[in-house]
Length: 181
Image 1 (tube, rainbow, N blue to C red):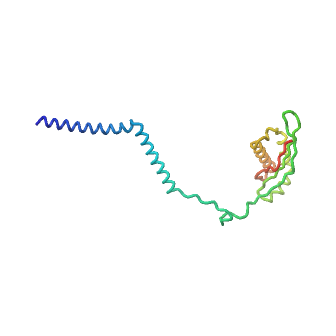
Image 2 (image 1 turned 135 degrees about the vertical axis):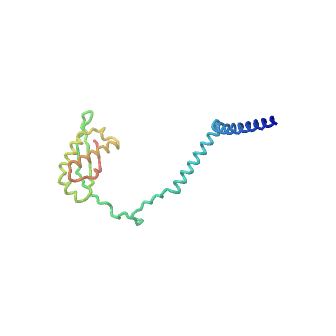
């Protein structure tokens, strides 16, 4: 009888050992097998992707459509108040690398906030043209190449215009014509 109890104890211990080994073996097999690891990672990523998509579909606010004047929106049918001031054509000689004369002709307009500012800009026009002349004479033909060069010139002209027209503020300098000869 003692032998049967010993056998039962051995079988119970062997069964528990096999169960714990089977559990450890499953985890070891899952983490040790590359195919299973890749499948598990793909399943987790798929689950996260589906969850994220559902979140944005269910909880995200839809974008409001842009309303136009024709569709009866809150936007005014009258365009914003803007005024333009034409600057007389500027012709200056610019520096060249080889010493040959190079001329620059510019046709510009100033964009103002209100039409009432035209009178003030007209009075300050000699100061503005003086600022332009001093800057433009220092340019070289290479400074005017490409869209980046033109944008730098426009930005500098706008800065100088706002300095010269101190109480008034010019919104933009518009380039109508630029000829380098």
